[in-house]
Length: 306
Image 1: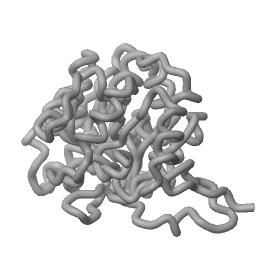
Image 2: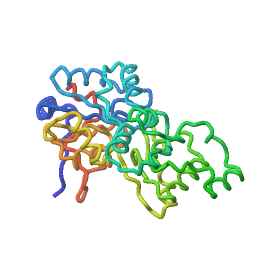
Image 3: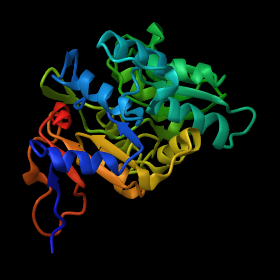
């Protein structure tokens, strides 16, 4: 028998019953609160309503291009009060994993970054040395001299022990060549997240998973350890920081493969799918054999106002 998901849009009694079950709401951001720079109607009022009822709100994002401080600024620019401590991103999750969990030789503590400044900021917050990333010296077409220097190893930093891949708006052949060379030398392969797409401006664009995909292919299918949703390493870190009862927590998101799966596999009390991002119809989880089915769903977050 297929698992069913309850539609809460327009159901005041159902909304009240659903909200009463939880003390903590974990919110994805892109595709739930906004798309690009477009704030969805009713978002601010819905968050205010939850807070007025004593609910704890945590913003959990796979977008590694922004640091927690960057996300706080974006939330506030959208009219959403927030503190840095209420934000938990995949870049921060990766920095915590590298600095506090991953055991690296003392001589191989440097991270080669394929990604944006959000990753660099969070690595800095954990005092993790890094190269690559937004360094402009990597933003050029590969030259014959580059081929020779990378192949011989003379261009490689011997202290690199990790390749960390996130969404990189300036990815190029040279950066991928460096990343591949470090991986072939035995560097640990990590990814902030594996989202194949990123919702923005009402459409879908390549996500962080598209940056790691060519490296996976070049490494014969070797998968990176992913540290964003739906990785339970991220859930464990969130629970460790915020100290909540998982059965009294609800994950709110727009993606079945990351957000909803994250909540289900993490043993949360419920999941809520919002149809303003990647997932656009309940038909995507209906039918026999579907493994990832949200507890409930709404057409847009503002519907929770009743």
